[in-house]
Length: 257
Image (cartoon, rainbow, N blue to C red):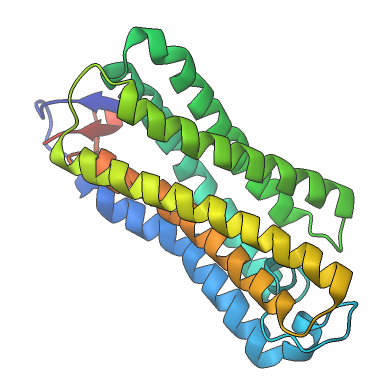
C-alpha cells in the first residue's frame, strides 16, 4: 500500500525523523529507468550486437531497438523490469501530488482537465509496467496494446498538463514554475517530432530495407523515451519547495519548509 502524503505548510509537533527535498528523491527515482535504459542499450551493443541489431531485412544496422534492448535478452530484461516496478509507487505518489497541486492552482472551470491529466498519467504508468512485463516475444498482443496505450496517454498527458499550466491557472506562475513550463513545451515538441520521425523510419525500413534506416528508427525511439522521462522530471521545479518528511505522529507527509 502506498503511503498517504499529506501536505503541511509548517513544521510543528514532534521533531522529524528525516526530511528530504523532493528534488533529491525525484533525481534518485528517475535514475532507475534512465540508468537501466542506458545499461540495456550499452550491454546489448557490447554483448548482443548481432542479435539485437538484426532485422528481417538483413541490412546493416548499428543500434538495437528499444524492444530488443530491454525485452529480448538477459540480464537486460530483468534489469529493466525491476527498475520500472521499483519506480511505480513513487510515480503514483506524484500523480496524487499533482491532484492537490492542480486543485490549488487551476481555475475551477478547468478542473475536469486536471482530473483527466492525472488519470492519463496513472494509465500511462501502468501501461509502461505492462509493456515491460510482457515483451513482444512473451506476448506480442499485450505488449503491442500496452505500447499503444502508453504512447497515447503519454502524448495527451503532456499536452493537457502543459496547457493547464499555461492557460488554466488561477494564480501566477512562480519563477521555478515558469522554468518548468518552458521545459514542458520544448520536451513535448521534441517528443512528438521524434515519434513521427521514428514512425517514418520504421515504415521506410519495412518497405525499402535500406541500410541504416532502422538505426535512425532506434535513435528516434531513444529520444521519445528520454524526453518522456525528462518531461516527468519537470516535477522537480513544480514541487521545488517541497520536502518529504517523516515523524512518528503524522507519518510520511509533504512539508513546504
